[in-house]
Length: 127
Image: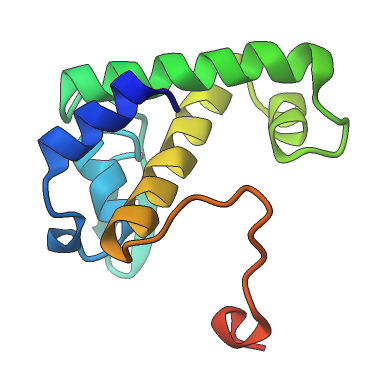
């Protein structure tokens, strides 16, 4: 995520604590499938062009850049390469943008700094 996307998210979202969790932020951006639930059965529909169009576009284009890099240089066992083996590039781009939105929420809501080498503790994971 670059400086343009990061500054646009901070300026548009404001206080990330207003969202209950990262999925709500991702849904507000239009990066999660539409849910239709009835009788305890959940049905996930497709991704539409809902949400903030500008941020949605920035997040998807950033994810497409990651995909271009992952095709050539990422390790075969990386999350992105495994996802691209199962799904097409557009689905992988939305999934990556969704993941990034959830990470952004966690960083903003909990006042943390991004560390690429971060490993959650056993206490946080629930073990």
